[in-house]
Structures are given as C-alpha cells and as structure tokens.
Length: 452
Image (tube, rainbow, N blue to C red):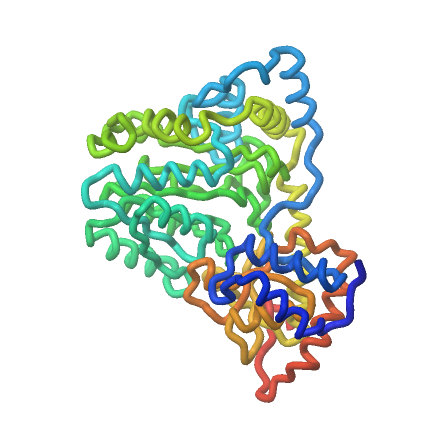
C-alpha cells in the first residue's frame, strides 16, 4: 500500500460511498472505520487514521504472565468466573483506588465488567429505573457516542448540557435547573472528556456531587482516561495529586475505570465498576420488575452482569490483577507510559495550526487545554459533515463532533493514538495540499492550543 497522491480520485470515492450505503449525515465511528478501510483497499492508499479512539501503545507483559500462571496453577479456564469478580482482583482494585484516587472503597464495591462500556450500560439501566418518573439520563456533552446509543437502546430519555456553554458555577446552576424538573435519574460524563479533553475542576465536581445527593440523582463518572490530564504529576501511588472524582463529594455514584487506555490492555475487555458503598446497600422498590431485586448492588451484579455476560473471563481478570499489583507497588508508572499520547497531540496540533485549522474546544476554563488522547479541529468554510467527507479525499480520517452530542457542529474529533511520529511529515504534506486547495479568502486566526 502506498501513501497515494492527494486528493484521491473523487469519482472512485463516490462510488465506494454509493456502494456502502452509509448515511453520511449519521456515520458511526465503526462505519467511518469501515469506509476508510474500503477506500484504502480499493485505491491502494494509506490513510492517517484518526477516527478510532483505541489505544496503540505496548502493554506490560506482566498481564500475560499473571494470566498464564493462574491458568497453570488454578486451571481457571475450567471454571466459570464469579459474577462479582475474583477476590484477588477486587482487593487490588480497592488498593488502586486508594493509591490513585485517595478513596477508601471496600473490595466488595469493586466489580469487574466487560469493559467500562458494560459498566456504563448497567449503571444507566439502574439510574433510569430506580425511581418512578426518573427515566432520563443527563449528559455533560460532548460524550462518547456509544454511551448515547446505550441510553436509546435502554429506552431511556436523554438530555444534555454543553460544556462549551456552561463551566464552573454556571455549570452547577444549569445542572441544578435540570434536576429541579424531577425527571433525571442519572448524570453521565467523562473527565478528561471524550472528545473535547476538557477536565472538570474540583469545585465543579463538588457542586455536582452536592446536587446528586440533594436531588437523589446517580452520577455515572467515566474515568476511561484516568490520570491522563498530563498537566498534572499523577502516577505515584499514595501521593498527591490524585485523579479528581465526584466520589469525594457524594455517595450517589458509579465510577467507571477502564484498563484499555491507561494500561493499553483493550483486547482483554475488562474494566472496574466502582459502586458507592451506600449505593451498594441502597434499596429501590422500582428496580424489582426489571432486576428481580430491590437492592442496587444485587441489581448491578445479578440483575445486570449475570444476564448479560455472566461475568468477565478469568484470564482477563488475572491479567488485570498483574497490572494493578505492579501499579500499586510503584513498579508500573502507567501515567508516564501514556504521556506519549500527549506528546503526539502537541505536535499534531502544531501541524494543523500551521495549515489554517483551529481547535473547536480550545480552552479549559481559561487554561490551555491539555494535550492528550483527543483534540478537536475545524477549518473555515466547512461544517463538520462537509469537513469529514473532504478530509477523506486527503487521506485523513476523523469523526464529526455532532456524533458525540456536541452542539459545536463545525468540526471533527481526532484521536492521536494511531498516528505514529513517523507519519508527521505525511500529515504535514497532506494538510499543506489541503490548505492550498482550500484557500481562506478572509484571514482567520489559526491558533491551536496557544500556538500560532
């Protein structure tokens, strides 16, 4: 496969679009991925792949070693896993939460799930059915597109608050206004945020946590990008700074921890659902018709995990045990490992800025936005859908911000994980040609992340 001369043959790309039948107004991440694969195969060209938010760094071999040892010593493949997780994993997860979030969470409240996505799915189902009339999930947008699909699949209502419009005290006031309506059962968000890379501040989390307690709403906090705000010196077990969490400010929470990004361990499909100790014991009669129990903790494990996957494979659980043990012992600095994403983002933002692009989400409450797993970009004269299609002709793939629930419809989300530094000259050349082919008649600022 060669790099290909851009722009690629427009007639051939149009034929591929016609053949696939994808709705260009509503392309999912995986549909975009498949479309790019078709173009690469049919035209024999190479794309700069920025559409798929999946990790692409080497994982620590301790995960495989621990799983192999468990298989050899305990014959784990011959046994069904416990629905709520093996004791060794629950214990290490509890230690990890103390070491890196400064949370005292008993092992019984740490439940392995088939990725954080399964944890979020069950948490939404509980939040939307726990109280009569509270069948709506409030999103702090933008957000992971698949979480929104889960909400619709569950038949729940969906409302949103756009983070580019409300921050700080304004965010807390707007969420309070929404909670006052009485229809919100859960509030879902990620921090650092996918795709904007905004990070909620401690004061915001405190205000939101107090609202969740006062209005009896369950927070669903997605920490898929745990400790990946690289402006902070995270990563030393038991020492501040700690990853901020709403769990310090309310007992109405599910916190979702993923092994995919922080440990580069996506193939195992394993995450940890952290269930508030108070929530674990809480009773909610409205849950019984759907979950066959009034107890929230029981509903999560036996009403949710049991009837969807019947647990997480033991090999995956033992692999994560090895990673957590090493991190807890200070022998695996997962934060330093993932800083590579920040380095890539910083350089890519410079290249995009040089060629007339600008950030859509460009600051974090007046501070420079962190460099991380994602960034968002726009180009004058294009909306997000138009830019997505046009960029395909120049061999660069991304997804629209509109697909993430963002009200900022002018741009795209780019993931840096699959852009190897060796491809930076290719990115530079393609964007140079794009800019030459799309001159901006009215000069605009092309500042990205404070860099001209």
